[in-house]
Length: 189
Image (cartoon, rainbow, N blue to C red; front, side, top):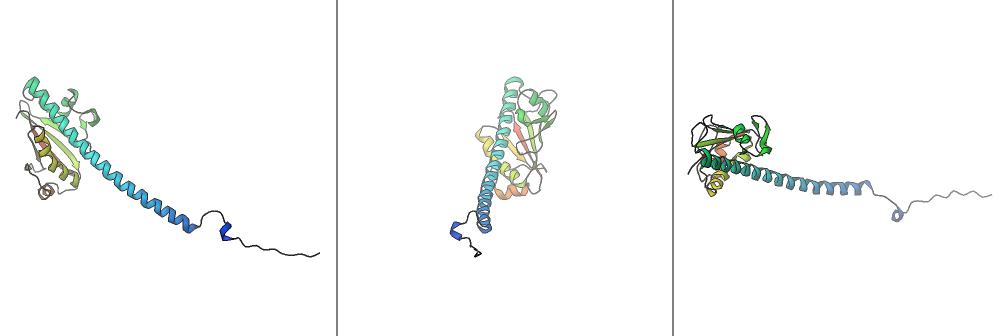
C-alpha cells in the first residue's frame, strides 16, 4: 500500500472574498463620499434655517403692521408682547415653545415688544452665531424695504445698523459667540 500526501496550494485566481486591503479601500472611498454629502447637506440645512428666520421676521412684521394699521392704528393700551401677538394669530405657531417662550428658526430666543400707544414695535432674536448675526444684519434692511416696511437692525449696544450694511460693519456688530439682533419696525410709513 502506498501512501501519499497531497498538498495543494490555493490558486489566487480561484479564491473567494475580499482582502483586507480591498475592504479598506472601499470603506475609505465610502467615507469620503459620505463626508462630502454630509458637508453639502449641512450647508443646505443652514441656508434653509436662515431663509426660514427671514420668512418668520417678514411674516410677523407684516402681520403685526397690517393688524394694527387696519384695526387699532397704534399699539394697544397694554402694549404688545409675543404672547399677545401669538393669541391674535400674528406669530407662526412653530415658534411657540410654551406660554411666553418663543424660539426663532435658528434656535435662539425670540421676543416681540411694542409700547402702549406706540407706532413701532421691536423684535429681538437672541443666541445667534456670529455668521447668522452678520447674515441677518446684511439682509434685513434690503428685505424689509422691498416690502415697504421701515426696519432698523440694532446690536446689543443699541447701535443702529446702516441701510447699506457691509461685512466689516456687520462683523463689528456681531463680535461675540452668542449675539442678539434687535429690529425696530414702524407701523406706518
